[in-house]
Amino acid sequence: VHLDYLEAGANVIISASYQATIQGFEAKGLSIEEAETLIKRSVEIACEAREIYLQRCAKGYWDFLDSPKIDRHPVLVAASVGSYGAYLADGSEYSGNYGASVALETLKEFHRRRLQILANSGADLIAFETIPNKLEAQAYVELLKEENIDIPAWFSFSSTDGTNVVSGDPITECAKIADSCSQVVAVGINCTPPRLIHGLILSIRKVTPHLVYTNKSLLYLTTLPATY
Image (cartoon, helix red, strand yellow):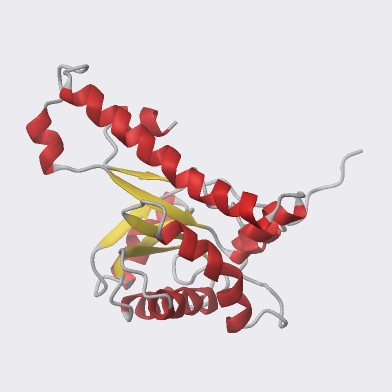
């Protein structure tokens, strides 16, 4: 899959670690060591795909690519970090509602070890994706500082109304939290209907640069109609 994206012209590929967590793997019977190995392996696979792609380009596998062009546009590997709600797999990544018992420290300790692993896995940057609320954004910012993460990161939020992130927190407040961290090099939107993107980007235009990768405008339903 990574190679498909590179062959289609992508300059950044994202590891398949969005929903990969130590806690989730443990729940499936894996040891902590096995879980950590799998998380690191997700980035290694992306890096291997990049190496294959660059080798093919250097050998002239595709006539429309040449080495000087590759030098000007390096391929980056982003290590994906999904939200706490993605681990819960109960739809809360699309609502940002984790309940009163989930505090800032809860989120920091949940993400800490995975972030350490991904930051030392060979990735070029960390992609904090589909962030549903400002509490989790704050947790990420504090972890980046506390763990002295020395590779850049991007923060990407999701929205359903074009003004707020899915929890109801204003996108402007979330963007300010991200922008307060020197390691964050881009702030943007993902997993959001394309029709909302223009307004969201305008609302955070003072935070630069921006990044956008939308969805297909599909909706996540927390309740399904009865089937008879």
